[in-house]
Amino acid sequence: MGDVLGVAVLGAGHMGADHIRRLDRVVSGARVAAVADPDSERAKAAVAGIEGVSVHTESASALDAPGVGAVLIASPGPAHEEALLAAFGRGLPVLCEKPMVPDSAGALRVVEAEARLGRRLAQIGFMRRYDAEYRQLKSLLDSGRLGRPLMLHCVHRNVSSPPGFTSAMLVNSSVSHEIDAARWLLGQELTAVTVLRPRPSGGAPDGLLDPQFVLFETAGGALVDVEVFVNCGFGYQVRCEAVGEAGSARIGEEHSMVVTADGGARADVPQDYLVRFADAYDREVQAWVDATRQGRATGPDAWDGYAASVVAEAGVRALETGTRVSVQMAPRPAPYDR
View (cartoon, rainbow, N blue to C red):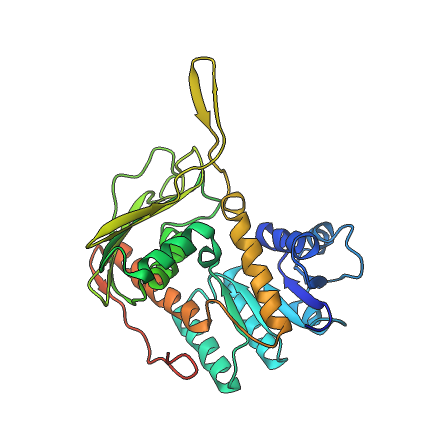
């Protein structure tokens, strides 16, 4: 399949550092060739012990570094559009963490820029598509054994929200994964969204509307509900139950070790998404590396990234107005007119 793929990683924060570790220690056929982060000390710490890596404070210089044949974008969302367009301009294949671009107008500009190239370069980091349980549920739904899907019931809980997390981010950051998962699992676009707000939890920071209950309608007449609770305090939980005309299936139940002692039983609950979805991230990045080395692009594409941004924007409007908001998407351009 050719030489080892040299990857420039943009962003050396929590997600970027984990991808650097993954590329160096887990994934085959790739190496970290360059890292860019405005905090040079953080970047140096992330690549400590890895030979042959150049460290940069500017993304452009990392993309132009010797040995770079692809780019993994793990910088904050507002920086993604510039980085994607810069990669496209250099003909570099990209794995971009979600959100592809936070605002739908910027996301559409990325879609249109890639369409003008006449070939796919981008894969978007909706890693749940690579999780074993989600893939099993997708296969079951596609088989028709559950009959026509009627509902998806979803749960998305975090231990606590990071500093600066806003009420809108429960929808456009946390629930963006459910947006993509629902579109993928059902094979249907989301057409409308309503957000209900119970009384905020006492564990939520002042002013944060947490939890929220998000209800999506689909083009095929199904309903998708999401309980998003980012300050639950006890663990990281992601669950999904599909209900069809002929049966139901549920994923995301804890399968960790159960310890029975001292008159009780205890099961560990993951505390972080990097723990719960570690295998999914590994499979996602390996699939991207394998496809890139073969001159192909697979997985969620730029249109999927755009769709998630459009639906999330509608969700934020629904949160702010307390009304049902329709999702309005642009026409799907080639090569996304599948």
